[in-house]
Image (tube, rainbow, N blue to C red; front, top):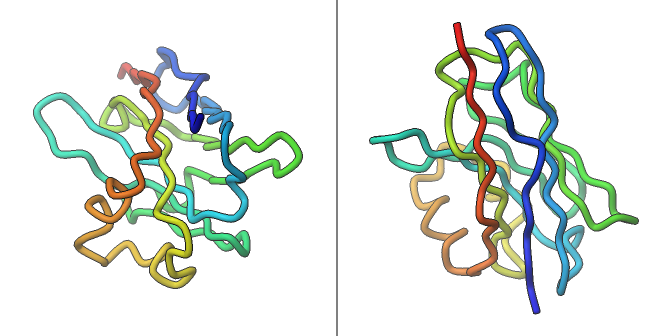
Length: 135
């Protein structure tokens, strides 16, 4: 049974840091394009960071230089290190896997308009973890 379980969310002040974890089971996450997404109240879900099967990473402009996506293949776990947090980072954060054999290049392309649609096709999504940043 495929499962993604996020943890590590919480409440922090502006400028603080959090590290999110996403434990995968039922599949080998390192073989997939994996991503972090977030959704704030009243807003659409948006892509935050991605890591492809080769370990290359990419980020949305809004988090570039502040967030770092990584994975521990031995633990089958994905991470999102978030530094210099801002109130606008407040959202529910989700990890997800793209469909198997997703293009490594497309995995890192944050200009691709159908990114969220493509990730939704896999059905591999966690339940989310809440991040709240106060000013």
